[in-house]
Length: 396
Ligand SMILES: [Zn+2]
Image 1 (cartoon, rainbow, N blue to C red):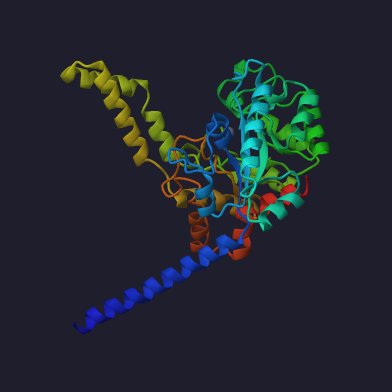
Image 2: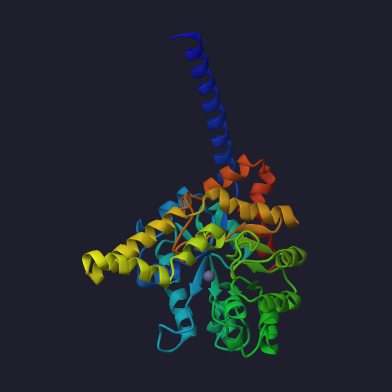
């Protein structure tokens, strides 16, 4: 081999060495940090159907094996039902059904999971290397306008209540309705009863979750809450302007309140490009596409099948990356500092995930990207879980 060949090999070895040293450093930081995810829908997606998530679930984002691989310590399990109840007794009964099934899973695998109710129990569970499980109820409609039901949910372990899901209800308006269907609203923001809900949550040590809420509800709640709030799964509006994301003034208000915004991974909340692609695949486009297939084949089933395959492929190509997700974290850090941002993946509740964040084993890639951008170990630890932990400590 000539001299220049040897030089190239030497340079490659140096680069590889530097690369593996950085990878090792990222792994060390990730493994030592407390990693908390503010939102996962595996309860409604798998557990309530009787699936055992301690076993592999290859068709879902979440199972215990991949959680461990991803280095997750603490998970807020979302208890979710839409405005139409599955249980004939109503949406409160739906919430209880889900908590029952989550509790059954945890007691069946008590060596691997711990249902925590306090900061102290969280710390204990982390020390025991268990998957610390917390309950977040996603949608204020589940209390059925009854503070006693709210108290009963707190007794069953609820540690945050998301004031609304996409649906508005009698005491709070949602982001979806405030933005897209303002004429449908009978009131905007929190009613008097809505304020009493926030106060009761504060008294009971349940976090007030403002993901999904409309801006008016957000500002009414933050003005009422005596404790730091959480946004369990929301991203940055200025990077991806959709109704579910938060604007700069909202980010500043959360920082002033001492709360935390947990970044949602859904491709449509991370990437403007993905949303534009989604919007372009509308019914007019579908009509044009199927018409052109029909001209040659005359088979409507075939035309629809081809359209779905085309749609899937187009969206697949528009998926954002890990770097795009970290842009959202970075945006909040640059706007208000590194104390107010965390992770709220929304795994098993979202139809498209970024490239590199395919499931719950992928969190270390966020740590690696933060390190690559020059974030300190201290900052990374705050973002991965320290900030949520601070908010928890102030409440329960
Ligand atoms: Zn949600």
